[in-house]
Amino acid sequence: MKKFLFTIVLAAMILPFAAAQGKLEVGKKAPEWILTDAAKKEFTMNSWSGKVLQINYVDPDNDDLNDPFNDAIDKAVDVDKVIDQNAFKGFGIVDLQSTRLPDGLVRAIAGRKAKKYDTTILFDYKGLLHEKWDMPKDSYTIVIVDKDRIVRGIYKGKIADGDIPGIIDMIVKLTRE
Image (cartoon, rainbow, N blue to C red; front, side):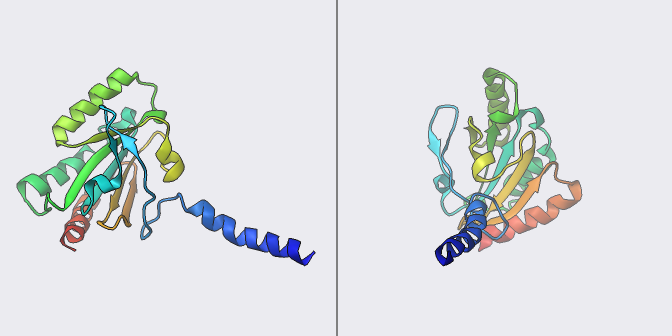
């Protein structure tokens, strides 16, 4: 009976910890993944090792939702030069589980975004990040991770215009560490 109770108590302590391993939390290391681009080339977060990452996890039905934020990031990198492009990488991951749009149209949208923001677009065909990172479906989520892959910010939905300068300041500080 003691062994049985011990097993139950141990399981009660371990299971919540194990379940939380796949969730993104600010201040915790982001779980790794492998996703492909349109040419089926594999990428991980370590594909941009040593860089602060801005990861846009996007439902193609909401692909323009955070364009004001992404435009501000581009300006901070390319015009104002306050974000060092050698220490920062922003890219997109298309959430194909959250749309009914045909793949051809999704690829066209992704191609347009890749060209507009001069970036990499990856495809999450099976909803891997819904599972590994607990990303919401039918949404637009931006995740900021530092050079050590510690999550520094999670922004679900539209980023308010008033929040953009603070997020950019955080990215600037992270790229200088």
